[in-house]
Image (tube, rainbow, N blue to C red):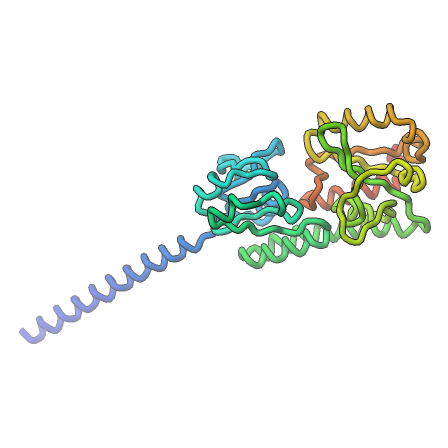
Amino acid sequence: MKGSRKIALIVLSLVLIVGLAGTFFVNQSRKSASRKPRIVATTYAVVQIADKLKLPLVGIPTTQNKIPQRYTHVTRVGNPMNPSVEKIAALKPTVVYSVTTLKDQFGRAFKQRHIQPHFLDLTSVAQLEQTVQIMGTTYHRKSQATNAINQIKQAKQRAKAVAIKHAVKLRVLVLMGLPGASYMIATNKSYVGDLVAISGGKNVFASKSQEYIQPNDEEIKRANPQVILRLAHALPQIVVPQFNSEFKSDPMWRTVSAVKHHRVYNLEEPNFDATANMRAAQAIKIVSNWLYPSKGSGN
């Protein structure tokens, strides 16, 4: 009898241990699941970063850009400049990402919902690299981040090698077109301005803090840019014809070196945008070739 009792106690103890272990495993799994990030990306640039890092997203912006395959069925949360607070709140996000250039667009409605977007600084290629590195560390995607950053660094090195062969930097004017027959001048503090600097050009409009400034015909004439880059930030099917009309109707443009020598180029998505994105390596290559074309390139 004593032997039978001992066996029963041992079996009972094993059952309890297995049961407790099972309960612990379930609880840990639940905790782990609850820690999974629920990320909302409100701009296409953030979607690109997430795709490179293979991050899961629960919300993406409503955009005409081609969405990566992994996010085709993810909830759309509206225009990057005016996303839907209600849709974002319903997704119960752990973090909402936007970009610093749109910070002023996020107002009281988000605060009322106790949503504090995290604004990524994508105003330059260096800031993009830093952002990718930080996100790679945060979400345990260090190898993916390293690979993405290395591609950009290689493009920068190639552009520098081309530019160093030219003693005098080309004078470059960068314009950002807006729907409604208007445009702004992009300074050295803008992302495209940074692409110009990396490619060995000199932005004819510099600023200590402003990314964009109002155009001034007299100053443009005095600067006499040798290359003009025109960024069609939104609705290129509208903005590019606007640019063409402006350059034909305003006689000032015919006095500028870039127009005289047919060195006016349109920057369109997906390779170009107002903020840095994961097409940066390709963008650097294109701008470098526009500024200092290789023989036989036709530019």
